Length: 620
Image (cartoon, rainbow, N blue to C red; front, side):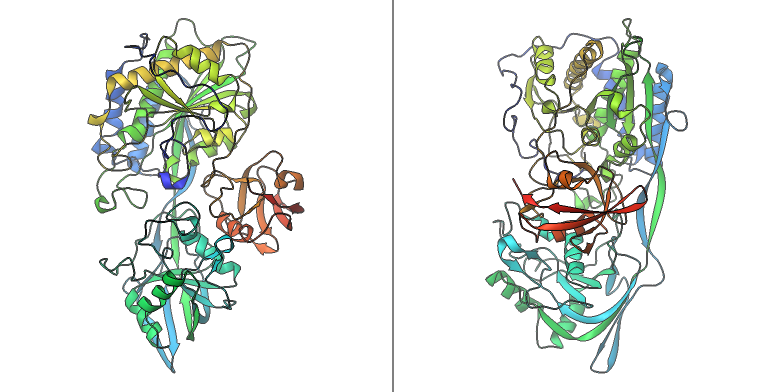
């Protein structure tokens, strides 16, 4: 499961029931000692699979790594031993590529010309390009633009009365009043405005040609003035972006009689932009090399036996990748370099999926519909594997009955099992309730089809989904997520319950009918409240890597985007006259618009540019 800051989900917020109208929650009093035994599903054998996948030898299974390849080979061997039909590009493997890291090229420089003297900074000593920087050159006057935030709904704008056109902007990390626990923008802290990529998009919208970040003093008094490390970026932002040491920025500010603490303190106190021109020019060059590597989904099928239903497919999937040796997505930043074992996240889901494959492959009844068992890679990088499958499906998505997703199912506590996606079909509430009658799990049901795991890719393709999850814990995204913390009896109960639910779906002559659900109010799941402003367009961004625009995964029914003729798969390249090279560029423009504004939208579709007109609605 990706880092929880990446997307909102009711479980993350500690909610235990549906939002709005939805299926009933199983009564807490209905507790059974066991789920009826099912051949092939044993807690001990499930834990043995987890033990291998979460071992030191696999080095945390980072997508694209050797450890991840070993995990894929292990799953493929298990599929072969069970006699599953290989349905990948190469046997059981479905290949795709992802960015596995960045490194610096040879053309990185930062020079300023001040008082007739050229001052040159040294890369990796005084400055470093950020991982999402473009490989590009820029030159222009340098202006200080505070935190680089334009938030009209909060009456805050660092660019007020500042002309950044054709200039290089110096920006503070974070957001005002960072040391305060009280949110300053919206209802979350840190807010979307603090995201560096969004700040770069804002700077571009104001005409900047390059961006220089620096860590402020207030709130960071006890921290070393270190440069950040390169990490996976998911694509560049179209302009050169670097981070400089505070000592360098202090030299720049002293030249105009300023200092960082005073400038930052003035903004924090008044909650108003306090930007100014530094009075000199800079030349900036960045050269960031991106390494691409192959990784694989692992796909095995059991053909259906009913001639009338065999063309329909039930997908049972779990991601098998994790965080490797840590990095920016780790919640233990001081333990970078240590194996992040990912026993619960998500060796547990992968092992449960293998147990289900074993149980169904040996069932005497057989399967009426076809079953696809899938181990996804690249989930931690943004649902890359499941998104790739949906775009290159081995079985038509239109013929996919439902997708069942297992992510972090290894720590059943207090008999509580969370189930997401329940609102994606009216059949799911009764299905879960009926199968739980003599099982007695405390089901905490959630309506939304969008959440922080691979079922989202299928839901956005209009497929009913169910997401099984035993909850977040203190070892999440830390090296301490080890096999010894897995509950064998608990994961056995969960897996048996999922088997019962899956069996009913396979046997029922009627497919579950798809239903759209509300989009959660925050995060990359759609146009969330934070970061998008008051106007509503109604597009849902595609998960995974994309470049050259903002790729639309889905369009909300009844939205301005739908009325304008935007389609899933469109690449938005201009919005309201502004160029768009990323989701953040789009956000930077949209958040400044108001309900009722008419905007021109240019999309690339089938290799051609199509110009559309949309009247923006009011965000709900």
